[in-house]
Length: 559
Image (cartoon, rainbow, N blue to C red):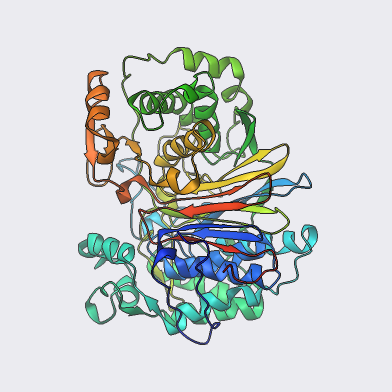
């Protein structure tokens, strides 16, 4: 892709439309900074901040706010966010913008099959994404000399909500897929199916109620979501829909800043968020794979895929205990102990697949990331859990609330059992790789339980096979377990892996289910790579609508 194409838009007062052509392929290369996201307009919102002299955190706030409007089926103000932040000066931290369960949970008879997946019964946790934007803004001002006003970083999001934007194929697909059940979701149809019909691809979609909510946040700051008149309106809307969340639950919602977990893989220090996220699972997969000479293999070969699949199976054996550290002790050091990882590697049979007893969870989210001219870098995932979250639209705020409460267990002996004020186990798993203490790789993907699986393919292709980000993201990927369209516990593999690979993996005992090449089931990932000479290259997944946009060192658009 020509690096260089970027879309100039005019601010919040008019609709913004993406440039077509090479930019839609998602590849960029430059020196001064870069943003990657699942939507061209969201990437442009962040790139504009970099051109205006903002830093990577400020760019990600603008991108995150924009994508919350542009991709309502996967994220929004009623969801959560997990951030990894690092810079060349040695700072490295995580912002865990994870909401907690309501303090007053509904009484249960003990006969329930589980927590409802949709509706107000799944809207059990508060939403922390807006607070995470505020936390990122404060960190930016304190550590990265950030000067962009918070309100200005919401300008594009407000414009997209008020003036509208063209509906993506992704939004149209997921609305059509859920249209039968969506008819019963509180307040949903009025916002997302205006006039009783789902908007078609390319139709201009407006969210005036959400625009007013964003304008309140711009005027009063991010804590207005949790305290004051807007917070009370949100609480009232939740109560009217049947959620147990209260104004006190919103007021108690805070982003936590914690040290990332880490593991060195082939000289690259990989960072991942700590529990209650599954970040250590990704690190464990890579630690297991470090015991094999992948570089001697062919990228995308049956041997490469087999080892990644089997490493996933081994790492997932330790995943069941991940939960809120406030409620149960987390054995991060034990999971990542080199001797334990070596034992997991030794349990892999090079010639034979092992069983896959894992229960797969679906979930959708968005990844975006940025780096600036100083090498300060950010990796973020935002989510409302399942596509369209709980389906509950909160009063007249335009906010679609998450169903992350459905991630809890009702088993009293389970580490992730539902309890008042508790944070659920979290699949959000953004990543970053450091070389000699400096950010080199920024990466992440959509996909719930599939995230560590996809990241294993991305990282091995980046590090072991030295492919560029566009090559990496275009390569065939796999997904173990059930999906919304295939209930078998099989190994889903994209068809462009090739007939020979399918035959060899079948001979090794893998139960294979083919996916179309570049299937959306394989997730939407993004990558930015910072080379030693300062050149950046990056891309977003050809399976989605995203692009990477590069900015010149002088902060002018790349030509």
